[in-house]
Length: 123
Image (cartoon, rainbow, N blue to C red; front, side):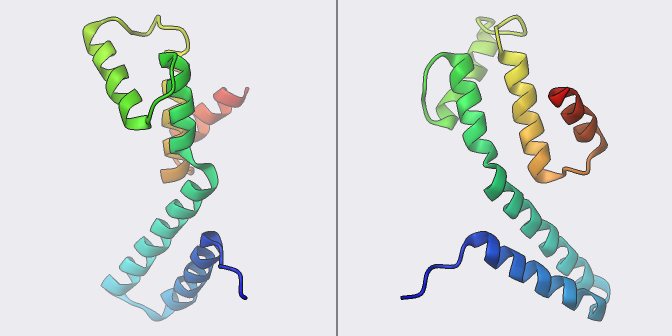
């Protein structure tokens, strides 16, 4: 019985195919191949880094209880609007910065502000 191929292996194979194909393409097709390659890179980073799981853990820590991510986001927003939570809430600013960095690390890790802030976060 053959083992199932991992998603990252499939993604890498398609990325390689697109990279080989790109020089043969022109105009709109070349652009779409580049966009597809970038989308696959985002998916690969998301699978590797799992930013939603990290966000859920960080927000659960700030909120003081575990719940699904959408629930934690909603509750946090409600408390921010109500003024019962804010910048002085222990761990909130650090958690939100970590969440933003996690999302940017998946979406565009070459972004200059991400690099600068990620360096500060690890320093």
